[in-house]
Length: 523
Image (cartoon, rainbow, N blue to C red; front, top):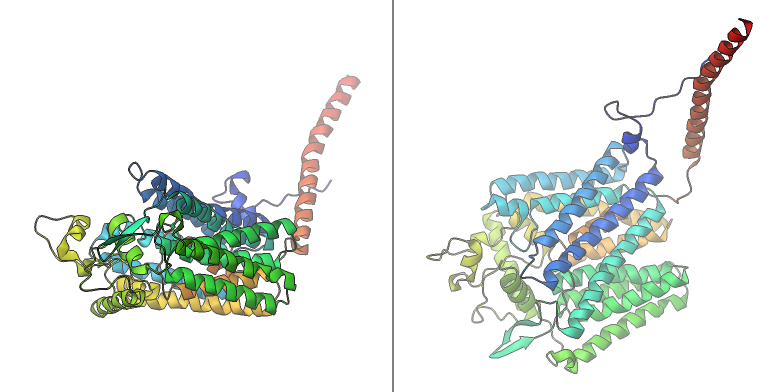
């Protein structure tokens, strides 16, 4: 009888099949695993931030960095699997290579920087060094390699879930004036300034505004696209929450982000010819944003009784100087920090000067303060030096990610960043133009929003993983969840081979037993 040989499954280092599920998993299995890993990674960061927000005496914001580390390692494993399986689309090779080049040049910048430890791990209470940037790359690559529509939907819902978690904590901060570092944010003249600004679990109201811009845009467009009534209710409630909270960030980022979300959702609705009833989400969002402004103007919850923007006070003083200890004090005689436009232009001009002095390698990752520092007798620690009046007007963040990248990691890193974003936007625009799936348009819109936010905002470990996940998913080449004909045929073949192999193994054994019993009877 002819023997049927079973084809050996692919293995790593010739180990057992069970331990090599990576090489043998299908696109469907990988996409399911990758999407869950990305959502868990995005959620771990705000979840770990709960500890220092509840008790910052026992816990520091290193916990937030711990959340990024766990999520980053998960994404790194998934990215390695994707590269092993060759799931990377051809159109995504340029931005992935550019991301790799940005990290490599970051190493050069780190070596030539002021402090290698800060360059690698990030500044105290910021933790956005080169290691964090490498983790962002893993989120990006993993999202690019998603192959199934359900996986992409899960990622979109994950973006909304991260916003909802931040929104709920923000609501607690607003209503109770607890769990926040941004109740008192400085002074105006001789009077203390109490804003009760919301920061959620994003470390700063400005970072929260950037995150909620993506979450609000996703919720509005998902409401317009969804045919599931229960899902639409969840999206609408989420959009109302995000709109309300964004006004309590008292920032230009919050206003611009809110406006972008409404305009983008309206454009998508008209372009996709959505039912007119679905447009109800836009006035609902506007109504809740208006409610927040009215409550502030009425002096509700013990805050200042007029709505104004305080980007400078929040970013430089309350966050940079008080919470993080990464910036110096503000000298009112030099800078009118309550004037938002003056604050923006001052930091931009100073950053341009730093870029001019450090064109090639920058100051080192997250080391913008170092070239601005002035020595103070008796102080050796940088954080202590920043408390000294000699180091007034020293800031660690500029509200423009493109300038910040050039200043800290050199102009080559800025070029690499542009080479990442431009191909991603082109690929997303082409996919959205084909109108194959509504999720493609949503992801492309979120990516456009994130790229624009970088013009007036800076990256953070609370925001960046969400943005890079969205940016990666926007140029993913995914299909519906129905298993392809090729996969079905392959499964049938493997199943037939397995059954035939089992039969060929069992038959000789049975035959030998029968032969043995017959021999005994003859005797």
